[in-house]
Length: 261
Ligand SMILES: O=P(O)(O)OC[C@H]1O[C@H](O[C@H]2O[C@H](CO)[C@@H](O)[C@H](O)[C@H]2O)[C@H](O)[C@@H](O)[C@@H]1O
Image 1 (spheres, rainbow, N blue to C red):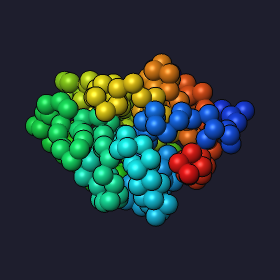
Image 2 (cartoon, rainbow, N blue to C red):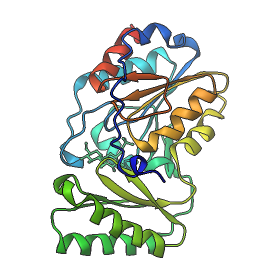
Image 3 (tube, rainbow, N blue to C red):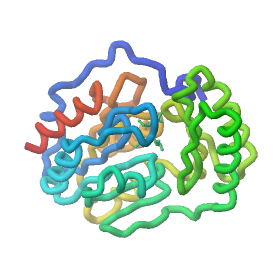
Image 4 (cartoon, helix red, strand yellow):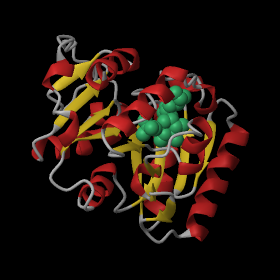
């Protein structure tokens, strides 16, 4: 793995914001809208619980659901329970914990069998570590655990080393670098894998996917939608396979507002 992939912070100084993107998006009657959450629909905050979800986000999602006949999915690293807490009125599809769980047409299920013993052990070990080093923040998830180092950005290497050693000791789990965080998640879980399965459902077949995401975990999904003839939109300045780019969540909301009007 390259260093920039571990950190997620390699910039792309000549990245250009694509203000005309709304006219390049597929017609509404043929499109499926797929959206990452943190850093894409909402600005990054100091802590996972600190994000602000504006009414504009809920309004855009409601309009997208109407205009696209329900073909709207949020595709997040967060658990479905957490997304539901932040967006209680959203009725579209939710893909949570990077694809380990899905809520589709109101039915919630895990997409893989979860090894609860190992998840519990990894979570306890991460929590014990954070007792000794309280500048790190532990976020338990249904399928694994995250160690955040946003409050200890000069100790990213320590977070990496600790989580890497846990990953090496845990069969069936792998290390997922994220924005100022390292996550342990089950092998075989990924947003692209979950999206392939979703887009194969009858209501999405033959539609043109549009996916927007900001994080390393979004890159395989951006690649997938582009291979399918759809539009991949990178939010922010980090290096990406995406052919379109927007500066921040506000720019994405504006483009979506224009497209859906
Ligand atoms: O796939 P996403 O919906 O983008 O979720 C990715 C992770 O987002 C959250 O962590 C990130 O955002 C936090 C709030 O802005 C920030 O404090 C943190 O540094 C970021 O890594 C969330 O906590 C994770 O569970 C998600 O996997």
